[in-house]
Image 1 (cartoon, rainbow, N blue to C red):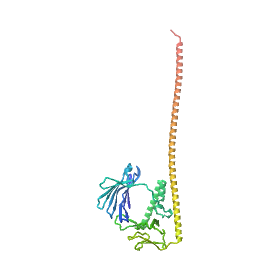
Image 2: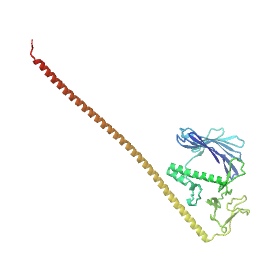
Image 3: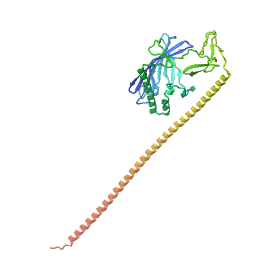
Image 4: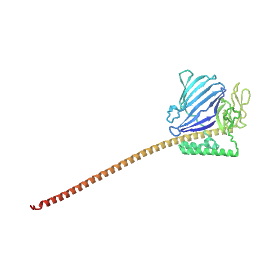
Length: 394
């Protein structure tokens, strides 16, 4: 897979070049599929979304059937929920004639109908189901560049909701990878994947890598118990054997014709398998293996209990954070209301003082006017009496 990223204003388009190949051993069929473009929508405005856009072709070389799937999404920041995650598909037979149509949303419900028919039926419906329990390797058993250890800082920051710290952790890892690449280029060292081998004979343009320890053996319920990983190799545990098998306790599987099949055995064409034990394990090894299994199971139960407690603590912390945010919002609202009440009280006080000052001003003016009026009356009366008391000369 190769990626090409382009920025288009408010969304980012990632063009994925490559193909996916799936082999169905029991049907002897190989299916290939191309990848649609990955869209990161509403980077600046609107609800942030991730969706697919463009065609995807699924084909089988043995049967000649092919399916063209068109992924449609809404690029507008104001798009409704039913405008995202839409698909429309058409199935063709080996003669390139349309057989079936499909339409819907890949994250909810997809309906199908035969070509030329109007009746639809449910083909795919997303339902919540219980997830399988995942086996987690302890951090001390991981090498330096394994994903779980390399990105642990980013994962912990995301779980805490610290986006800025997550960006910093991501930048540190990416910068380290750039420095390692530059060092290899300076020294002329060609990078070799530790678990993958490039297929040089592949006719396609894209680079195809194959798992080093790939096995085409089918799962045999009569002899296979479970799969496990040891030293980065995916192995199948055979019934009646031990995960770590030495030469003295190796179990050989033979087909019905006596041919040796090795550890990853499969059903032969002419009949079943039988087990031949080269040497039975000693009682000490059985007891030690039993004790080791009980210890591992006890540690797994302890880790499960600790994980449950950690999940409970995380839920309590999230609840506490929500309550703190609620209290902060209520405190902020109370402070805002108190500030408004204080402002209204101050305004009323100022208005009352102004009213009182204005009323005092009017009283002083009235008193001053009365005094002036009294003085005017006294002066007028005095001059009037003086002029009336003078003798008449004529």
